[in-house]
Length: 444
Image (cartoon, rainbow, N blue to C red; front, side, top):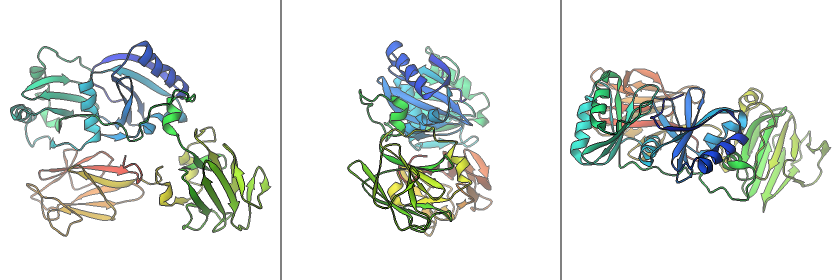
């Protein structure tokens, strides 16, 4: 669990389920009067955060103590459907929440790597600029933030330490003097949080709770194998083809499935399925269908060894083990029609507020006009570095700029290093953030 800036602990819930989350949320908002703060829980090697502003869910993110990235709200809620989580709720001032969210949502306006410029000098420079800024002190395992209001240090939020209200400036300088070679800075001017893209007010008549509302609010299909979920697909009006041929919208690579096996039509909330002349047939409740047939909410059709289940809104997770287990037993594809639910994450770079997809297996970066990404800045070489694709989602940063230059990942010099979503790449004076993103939402 990432150590967070000290704030009032409102609530802790061990083994919090989806149902208990709603109870905990209402207790904090209604019972404790929480208006601004955050919920958090640990998941593998990251901590997930839900920012609360004005008494409601606002945005979400993950952080591993070194880097973080904004996510959709559903990415915070969905793990509760897979199992309980140890939940915490903290009260926090709006200015700290804005700083945290900005660090996750935006590429820093400036980045200072260890050993390049003394952190104290950079802070003094910001104070002299007269600008408002939030600075994240990047050190492993913690979230530390400095808030600068024009020419003064307004607040210093150190992980696990109560804010030094009387003299935050000297407290900051003292902290920066401890192992400065391990500290890097991300500087964000004019910090302000933005709502997550999937934010929506929860209707007062919605009875299934926040978790299920934010995870699944539209009709979908769920592909299963042996009772285990393989993938889910949102439904929009139109025709969806299913079969073994890769040209199908849902491709199932299994010999029991015909090249063009079945067709699903969805319009005006009605889901119809028909067999497309397959060899083994399409079945509903054990009976082979001979004409277009309606799929009711929760009903499934059997296609070879697989099943496709239709849901109008709330996607039930009681249909087996994790999707990863089913991946070993089937191969599937989909068309752009289904891109609002992730299938494969694609590497992107964020520079100057723009997102650049990395679509080549070898993607060059440098000042040369022939590079895939042309950047200009002090110390940037003609062909400074490459991003090389490995297996699956893996991408490597490769330094190609020669002995007199360096490529840094999160402040460390590298020659050939694997990347993780959220890493900061630095070539010369230019800082680029690396993300693994889905095609649909643009989130990691």
